[in-house]
Image (cartoon, one colour):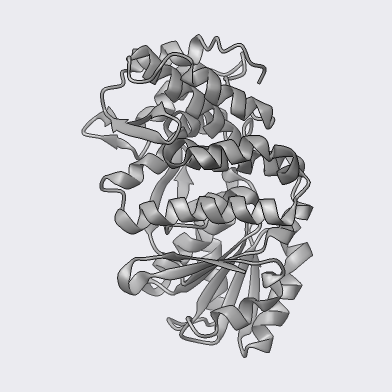
Length: 366
């Protein structure tokens, strides 16, 4: 077992990474949650595999557990889906002492956390992420929300879970494309903060794909440590935490412009990371060749590094203008200076973005 503390004073919590922890959810949360009624929010495919184990665990710890399903996919992360979950909580007569347990990927965690933050002005919630991307990124830090038609996460809150329980064993049932998408966030954490992690993922890609338990746990724990340290210093993204958005400005624009149907989140962020590196090079803020190094690492694990030819770049630019990272009419971009260090700037122009998106000559295959 490994534990990572997210140090936020009275809102502090532990991220626990341990094989088999899915069968001990009730035992793990019994001491940190107030009541003994719980709603498990999951998605159909994940629920079929794991909700029975979690329900049994909760019952063994004295919880009365109910289940609700939301359809997987970003297109379902809506206010209408949230409203359906409010109704389920009311039908189950869950009061302010109840707990909402999210069991699934980033979409389930985001919408479930948003519902927990707003139902009766806030009830306890616990994250049990079942995708690599959710384990190393979405489940940590308390960002919860839903999408609007014009952009991602435009309605949301900062609301911390009581605990995050990560079972690497569940990744054995994750489709390969979803696993690869999660590797984008591992690589991102290396680029923004830790060259050793960046190099580790590059050197251990095959072991990660084999789901080698030791290698996988080391990568997940280190990634969570990086994010936890940033969140502890800047919980509500007033400054430092913005570095975690590296690749996400263009990534979110790509997702929205393609109807959340063409790219998985990690795939879009991968393209966004390379685009940001090209912008940094073009502005003289990064050495020539950095974008190629980043693109090479991403392409080596099977991630795209440039938009497909049929992507409407004007649509991407439009979607970016609705991004929540716009401040005083200007986009805040995270640009890499080298592997392990990034900077936040509002000096990137639309022309810079368009040039990088349209002219990615990197010498690697995406």
